[in-house]
Image (cartoon, rainbow, N blue to C red; front, top):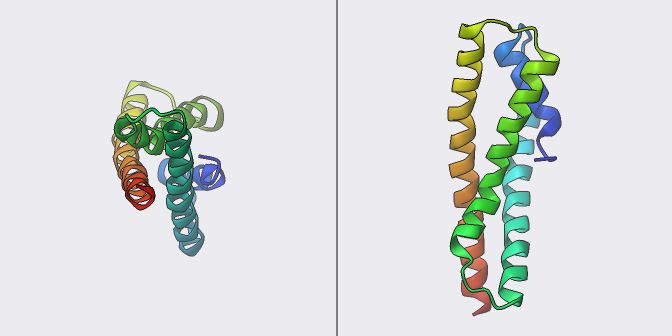
Length: 126
């Protein structure tokens, strides 16, 4: 999550505010860093789990990778209540509804990255 924290503010400001986001190359680099960090952290956590002879690593690797989506949704609450000037039921429902869908997509995507990386790692060491 810390790999994308700075970019989240600019993305939210461009989507929900009235600012224009123009640094797409930096966004792509940050996305690649996010995928690489997610894969490495999930591999490290899977290794620690296998080192204590716990063989049930499948779902845990998926949840470790996908937990970034949960942290992004937590950042949505921070952005809404601290940084934005949004009020009203419609703005609140649109903001949290759309962000829930996007964060669920991030959860599934990064969970798949973590599971694939852990599966490749486990097949390589065994």
